Length: 440
Image (cartoon, rainbow, N blue to C red; front, side, top):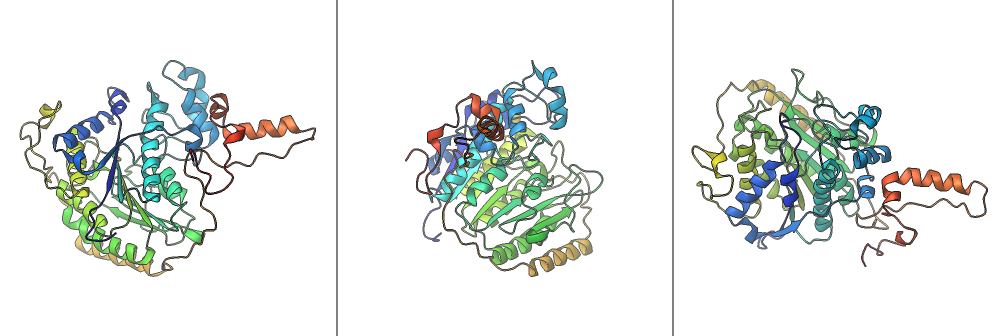
């Protein structure tokens, strides 16, 4: 991107997010998205970006990563009928962390759809940065809910970006390890995953050791930077900046997906880091400076008023706008009492447990791992896959065969009961080639 050209930003939101509720005692509050959006509007940041209403992902899009039986369960289970699906819920890891609530499937489709839309716009050069604060649910696995996450919108967005980009970088600054994304691409050399997170003391999810570096073709394409309680701006950026500068030099990604979980801020309800809002935002600005197409998402963050302030501040950074320290008045103004100020300052609730020699040793080891990386591995494309609307399945050739019903049944089972029953895939909707896109 030319330094003289102003960055074009696409921003995704839907007022429907305000209607979803995990439960009274659950720390995940989708309401924080509405609070963020109100501040964005209060600062008039929408004037500096293209604002889009999120389009819900179709079940078949979710099936690009998630298993059909898992998507089937998400599509049918409700608070009223969950007793009927008890065995399936147990199998797919529904529990107190991942409860069934009204509108669950619509919620998943909405935040995943926004991330996929952002990736599609990046692929076609329609924006330089796409923002989806509702996304970033990095713990969800192929067939399991985990850590308040049901559908892994990040994996789905990365798969979309891989249609046009040889290499995609995933970067995670949530206090929790980005285990679901790492697991999905652990064997791949086309996606590098980098996670800065709290590790040890049985902290969820318990993964993300420094020695976890990928396997097979993906060896050295996974980087983990495990940190300790009290991590502050100084410690964080002593690692973040040299590591990410080297990653960008060595890996040369065509696109970046950055998960900006705000639970790494000081005084988060579930966190134990001491990052200030400025320090958190500095990571976003640093990655923006490389001028690589970037999808920016939310993630964790459980002190609502701090989350809203942080993501609003980072929206301002991404659209190159300076905003006042005095918060604009919104419907949620009382949440920001008593100072009604934008800044989320670090608070010394405990000392930084990362000793200087440990930080330096970790920095050296991570950079040493990067030395093993094959610079910009080549991936040649002969055809570009269709934009994400429907996958390109091969129908079984069963004409004139006695097993026609069985083969067709197996095919329908493979694409998922929900998609079949709702007419989402029809015989005339298969793509002939890479130019035969949806709606053309």
